[in-house]
Image (tube, rainbow, N blue to C red; front, side, top):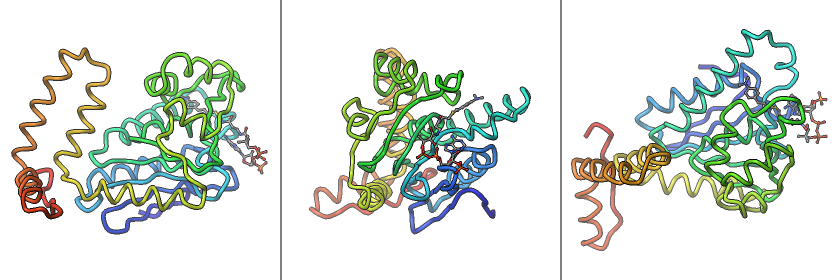
Length: 263
Ligand code: DAK
């Protein structure tokens, strides 16, 4: 598929989605959201892709939010479609079987912060900035921000960011647990690639199980969530990767994980 507003590249087991509207600070128009949805669907169905990086083009922005110019013209029905489209793509991203890193290389505001939070974890450049400034536009986060932010950083910080519309630095975002690691801007992509390729080399069944357990168990009572681990643990023993991982350890060599999701 030909894309107009994103770059979708694969290199070995790694897929990179780059939102590519640097003049508009990579703002999310309906077309961008649709193209991200198409790329995510292609990744989900790919046997080759084992890890994903989501980033923004240029050195100023990851994604500066939903496209305010496009939103200002929307009819209520178009707004509803945009909202559904955005929420669906964030769920699809979050539920990919492959691990996804958000490499945040500048402003991650509003929908940009929300899409980063739908990734498994966030690496940031030292010039990155985060916020949910929707309140300044007379609206609220609409792609899950009130919910994913409070789950990531706790109620107090979610309240402060959503109620003040304030913007925080990469270091502050790291201190509150929104960002895992901060890198000099020039080193961000190399660090994200190294982490992504490391995860791509792990067993697929175990990787998928970790994602399903952490995402699925997050809001459940511990007494119900912990037993789910036993089921996924058992499934790992149905994959050739479990035998290979343990054999490799005993033979003092690196494992070569080859199991697919169906074998
Ligand atoms: N949308 C459209 N264009 C944007 C944009 C955005 N979000 N952010 C920046 N741009 C454009 C600017 O208009 C400008 O375009 P030109 O004037 O050059 O044509 C260009 O990018 C460069 O921006 P600036 O000149 O403003 O650059 P500065 O360095 O001075 O400022 C900034 C950078 C990031 C502080 C500033 O651009 C800014 O405040 N941008 C808006 C940030 C923001 O408010 N983001 C939140 C958007 S609201 C929903 C679901 C989700 C959402 C809504 C509804 N439903 C469920 C219905 C999500 C809402 C949002 O994300």
